[in-house]
Amino acid sequence: MDTRPKLHLCQVLVIIALLMWTLITPVTPPTHAQNSYQATLAIRLDQPRWTINRNIYGQFAEHLGRLIYEGIWVGENSPIPNTRGLRNDVLAALKELHVPVLRWPGGCFADEYHWRDGIGPRDKRPRRSNSSWGGVDTNAFGTHEFMDLCEMLGADAYVNGNVGSGSPQEMMEWIEYMTADADSELANLRRRNGRDKPWKVPYFAIGNETWGCGGNMRPEYYADVYRRYATFIKNHSGNRIQKLAVGGYDENYNWTEVLMAQAGKQMDGLSLHYYTLPTGKWDKKGSATQFGENEWHTTLLRTLRMDEFIQRHSAIMDKYDPQKRVGLMVDEWGTWYDSEPGRDMGALYQQNTLRDAIVAGINLNIFHKHADRVKMTNIAQMINVLQAMILTDKGKMVLTPTYYVFRMYRVHQGATLIPVDLSAPEYKLGAASVPSLSVSASRDSAGRLHVSIINLNPNQPAELTTTIWGGAIKSLTGEVLTAPAVNSMNTFDSPNTVKPAPFSRYKLEGSQVSLSIPAKSVVALEFR
Ligand code: AHR
Image (cartoon, rainbow, N blue to C red; front, side):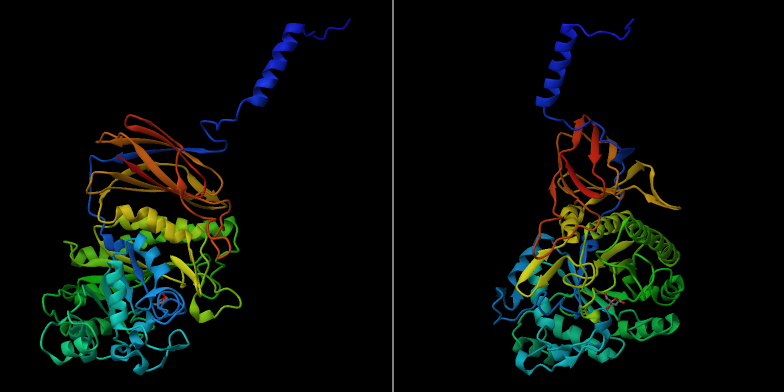
């Protein structure tokens, strides 16, 4: 006997109708994306902390590779549209970032730069070998051009002085040339060179990496050198200079200890340099563009060490300066990869991918967290060098994923840090693990809450249940930066592969928000 169940005609009709319905109904995204992970976030608007110094968003421009020449300076007679020699496309893009402060002329170059080479008629300026990075510097871009750039960007000038091959007198005279309103020989020289009113120079560094390219000094020796040079940094005509000392790098805690003990009272800031290398090895750093999940993970693991370095250098500074008067200035940070084959190795040109965007966001979140001590940072470097905002190829320009993170994050400049409590699983690969999310929040002077969320996991979206404590929320807008692959990038032929898009994967219910954060993304939210 056939015991198989038989379908009646009405059952067949129901099945056909169901099939038809699934075919014509549009697919709606599931509430919880497949393979996602769950996390919770509490935003403590009721516990505001310190101000995020706008200078944390500082930039760095060294005479290196194609940063100054081509990257920003093309000269007044260039076919590339320019304003007084500075290229208009790059200027317009940089203005969008609200650059608060710009460090110049180096880097290692600072300790071989003699400022008198870069003033006066351009056709009379000496051509000098750039012994740090190769090539010949025409000196067409000097003090007046740098100050013009700062004024056009609305950025404060951070001038890095020459200790390695310069004298205290040379440093003292440069400062008088730039800042004095007197009827003195140096102020009058500046006037004859076309600038009547003095400029403001709020930040001046006494050397760069004096433990290395700036003179290979011991910290005890440099502490005395610093004290000597600092004596001759004078304030003229109402200009008030913050004096910055060369600090350590990575785990070089002894340098910080000695400098703080022996010269802490004479300084306003102490620098820290830390570069993120995917492999951690200087002889084979890793590729900017050819990498898989393994190097994605090691790069994020290494960049997260910034948190530990800041904590430990700050702890030393706290011993000597519990009031936190002296700023920790992370005036060089970012990714450093192997130069592309066929490129000039000294030029430090590298492409920039979605991975760099994630690195930028992670570091900015870390700097916010420590903004009670970290008063300035300068990503290395602004154009065509290392982790750049902008790449150029003669007349062409492309904005990098890092540029977009700086644009999305500019709202945090000068805002008040709002603490967050995050509970999320780790993102593991082999035996190593990193947090899967990085979050930072701030409230601006208009009362808007800004929350930046990074999903470090390249495979899984995060379902983030968020509660806002201590404030009523009416609306939410946002942007998301992600891309198809971990190494997606913008090129001159395809400049819009990695670009922010509106963010709509949220549900707002009173003080609770459900957010769906895509894998490998940076999300910037504004709550009103
Ligand atoms: O940013 C490139 C170089 O890195 C700088 O010139 C130097 O200070 C550091 O070693």
